[in-house]
Structure formats: structure tokens, C-alpha cells
Length: 296
Image (cartoon, rainbow, N blue to C red):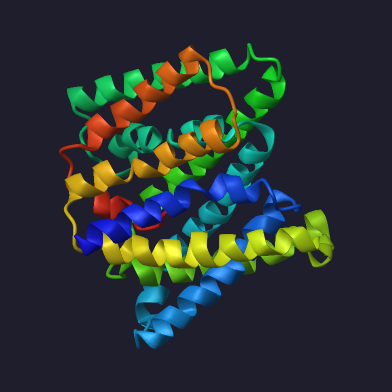
């Protein structure tokens, strides 16, 4: 029960990210850099206190995949944070949750896994749901910004799917160790990117944004990942598949109740089709824990 509570708490924590990003007065790349820096320092401290040793021989073996996955992680955050800035949290979250569908579509090519008839139907339903979300979003009063935001969300989904697929090729490293290295590498790679694109405006962050940055780094990254991996190790794949949907549900509740963002009936239907189909496609799969080595 303790493990399920930890995993559920991690999903709820991840589901509130959009709310906090809204109140940070920085560019998406700067937010990603600070999140990675604070989160990696937190996890580094945890690993040190747990007296876990990182095998640098294994790091060397997996170096190329770790670098590529770190690039995907950093880019995923940037696009996701951009999505939160342009559209509603519900639209951003639902478009981002297209990532498992992308993994399903690419798995026959990348992982040589057979795509069953059940999964083909689920992919088709998920794509229909995404069309409902995108199509109806373009009819709203802020249609262009919504479409841009959904586009950013889909780009984040592509990079997250890439991250999940790349993690399948990491050998003999546990999830916490992998995540620490990916966070640290992504942070290092983001430093020159932020310098050349944004300059050092990051040092002039408003005082009102500082608490939200610290919460995003310590709670949403450090504590969130710690609960994620601590809980995931002792619960079954079906439980992980079911409990993981607390993440988008939390985001949708915050969008509707806290921020009072409106969704049309067609968008709600599209969201139900998208989330429902991805849940059904993974409901009997025991491979989910191996795919989800790095969380949101």
C-alpha cells in the first residue's frame, strides 16, 4: 500500500506542474534549466545519502544513449512549458499524453515489437480523440494560440516518446541512477543553449517567481521522481498503468476548477477517447515499468 501511495503522490505532483509554470516569469528554456539544476542537485544528495555508487563503466557503455535521451528530456520540457504558456493546461496535457500512442506506432520499427490488432484499434481511437481536441480547439475564440500550444504539446510528446524508446536501450542501470545522469546531462547541455538564445536574463528573475521555481525543482522534480521510483519498484504493471492516469486527471481538474479554463464537449470527448485508448492498450502489459524509466 505504501508503494501505491508513493506512486500516486508522484502522479499528482506531476499533474500540478502546469499550474506552477504559469507563475514563473521566465522563458521555457530557462525554466527547464533551473528545474534540471535544482532537481539533479536534490537527487544527487539522495543518491549520496543512500550510499548508492554510480558505475562509470556502465555510464561509458551507455554514454551515447544517455546523451541522446538527455537532449530529448531537455527539449521535452521546453516544448511542454511552451504549451502551458500558449493554451490551456487541459489542451497541453492531453496533447502531451499522445506520447504513449507515438511509442506504440514506432515500437514495430524501433523495438521490433509486434503491433497487435487491439493496439492498432487503440492507436486509431487515440488519433481520432486528438483530432477532436485539435479541431475543436481551432474553433475557439483564441483558436490560433490554442493550436500553437497544442502543437508545442505534440512536439513535447514526440520528444517524450523518443525518451521512452531510448531508455529501452539503456543496459544494467536502474531508473534513479539513469534519471540523475539524464537530469545532470540535460542541465549541462541547456546552459549554452540558454546563454546563446536568452542571455543571462535568468539572473534577473522576479522575486514572485522564485518560490514557484524552487517548488518546481525540489517538489516536482526531486521529490516527484523519488516517489515515482520508490513506488514503482514494488507494484505491478497493471497498477502502474492505472495509477499513472492520476497525472492527466489532476491536470484536467486544476484546469477546470482552479484556473476555470473551459473545455468544449467535443474536446472532452476527444480527451476521453485519447486517455481511454492508451489505458486499454497498456492495461494487460507488464512492459510499462521498463518503458517509464523517466517521468514527466
